[in-house]
Length: 323
Image 1 (tube, rainbow, N blue to C red):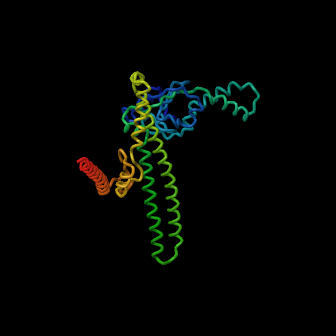
Image 2 (cartoon, rainbow, N blue to C red):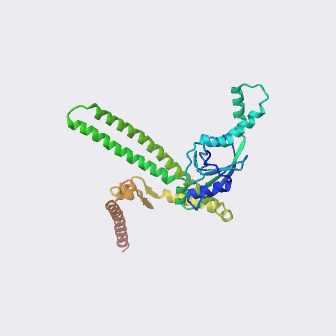
Image 3 (cartoon, rainbow, N blue to C red):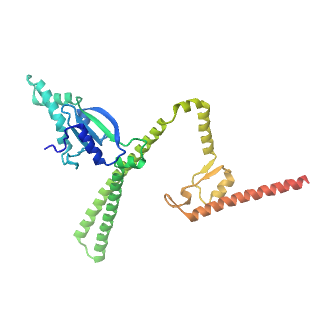
């Protein structure tokens, strides 16, 4: 029973957009797809609508290998079952061409698979938020929040199982007697934490790659929106001067390993145009400490005050010499 097959592409498109529930999602790519390109379940194109060229019917792919049923829920059909919609007729057509030839079954299967692999069988429409849309909408449409939740959930579950495992071992130790059941329970739970940590690493990779990919798309979209005529009229000299100014400014900034304890000595030795500080005033990664910030600013002001006093003393000495 093909509960995932829509009579027309329009119906499949409407069902997919309704399921995604994001008004910012729109068509971003339409391409003719060979049979081999559909074998993996549209890993790089989902969510998408697949229109079968031979019949005009369509399916809505919500994620790689998962399709939407005609009732609006996720179908239980496997991608192998879905693929038969276009693979079975293609194989049948190719086999009919060789029906009059005396060819072995194994050889015939190899020839048929090779011939149908590049046969255009579907029109695939990819849906996504445009690069210039809200960043939150892009993250939601790409499933980034779901992956982030999975990473956090796996980490929390692994941490909880680890606590239970060591609680079992502690209870066994406190009982004062050896119990194989406690030991094997601890070993099984510990093995589960290892598997969960591997899962966390995998999900973290997905989260990082997904976020980085979206940021690159937005940067590219922004660069394409730059008024080329305006840039062209500015000339090479103006563009080059901006690069040189940025490099010069960066070379005048003191950064790296700066803390409240060494900023005074560093300023006195280098005399930079500015000081860049971040981790040197944090009590934890990404968390600024108010006390460390106060100490840092106090040290900078002390150097400035010393410089001002030295300048005044020098000016006074010069005036006395002139008199």
